[in-house]
Length: 379
Image 1 (cartoon, rainbow, N blue to C red):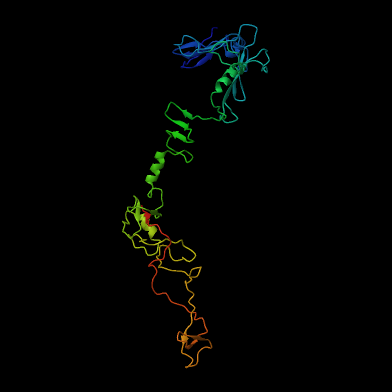
Image 2 (cartoon, rainbow, N blue to C red; image 1 turned 135 degrees about the vertical axis):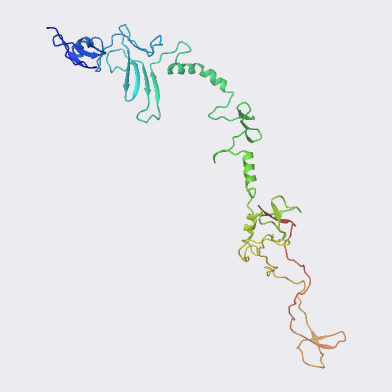
């Protein structure tokens, strides 16, 4: 009896013919055979496909993606001769291409290309290595180390002779000439015969260790409230007019709003009145300490110390006094005679004594002096 399908018939139903073993699928209103079972075809498939566990490919493998491509984009093609093919494999994270001259997988005597991503170092130092590079025979071939070394040795004598006219990078003394390093005149270093060093067209400094340009220094000084000199600095000036940024210390007034730093500075001095400069006319500054311990900025009157060497008069001042005569008696035992041959008494003492100076001299005590102005730096 012939095989008959058992209803009902629903889309996707499957039924098997027990006599032939063929399975059928109901789709689009009809029963359609599915073909032989896949497990019955394993022996046939083994001849046509590579197993996932490995195998041998006996001809080329081509990969062509896209119907518009006219040729394969990737091709693995073993050599048809008796030599051995290139090995492509991974080793400790490296991608390796290697040719071997034996069929042993461990053969490492052939040429090698290694793409090492530096797995151990987290990719910090990836490298590409190429071994067994042949000596190049044309200009577009890679050069091996032996070729480069031989080429350098061949021209080394000529190069050394030519370099005798130049200063070596590892040091050499120049005599009588100038040294100039430039890049077409845009920026350069110039060591001149007058023992000066010029650095031209420097970039503006960005870090503390960079060389500063004159423009940068000038701008920084100009931007400083005191132009680089601390507010309150005092110096000597031999001109009737104080320079810009300075006041004469002659008791004049100044604007505390426009000069807040000077105002704050003078507030720490003795006797300061807001907005009025000290008057140092006819005065000499004295360093704090020793015999001067009064507050800073205070004014002290004249003082004259006893000199180390005593004053000496041009006449010692010793003298005698006479008084009376022999008729009156008394007095010292020494006698003298005047022009009239009269006997007089003379004192036996030298008559030493002191005198007080009440007039003469100068109005001011000072050392040898140069007339100047004192000036003070303001904001």
